[in-house]
Length: 269
Image (cartoon, rainbow, N blue to C red):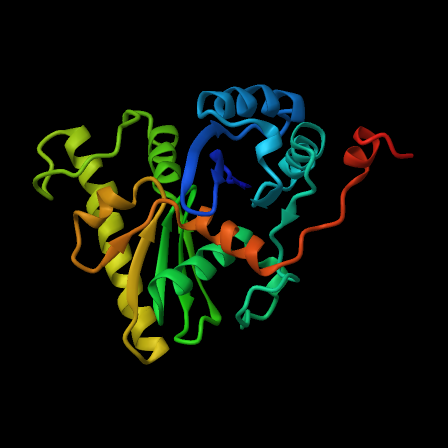
């Protein structure tokens, strides 16, 4: 079975795939200083709850945009699962060209989304990821990654409003029934929700015009279903897109050689 770990700025998501489907998908808040042992306490308990054991896992892949978390996640795989994980990075075999000026600067999550989106849904398309940042990634008909757009995430915008304006409260994200708010909270909710719908529609229109051909629009990230309700532009949502990208990347690339911790565990010098 394959263990995949997607470490984002907000959450770390771990999942196990048995070749036919996901046996479990679990989330924990991202804490860059969380140790491999702390991750193990969390993950091994959830594996057991799903009827799985570490010995059931014979392959692993990690994608992260939090460099400080990578060391501990790699140690988790080596010390507790006894597998050497594949680390998602630009230099691997992705099966497509990365047509940007500096491929090494592209976040692993964006390349993983591009891989999964093209393999599962075809292209050309735009993938919108409603995460800590809201990203727009453009994938050609041949699967090539053409770059995209990075905008502030929804929760970042909410926190900025709350902290920068003394009289504005912290609010939750909801779809207002009307654009014109008749009190402070509804007005803020309208600005966030319909403002981001306008951002999505405006940027996708400009991307399509610049790209020069029709582009399907796919959304991912926890808030994707909520924002898909507000516009006909988004043609589908897939909350496991990055996990599927890790699964597909692991299938394309050879398994890494065992790391030092695993060698010691097996009794070698």
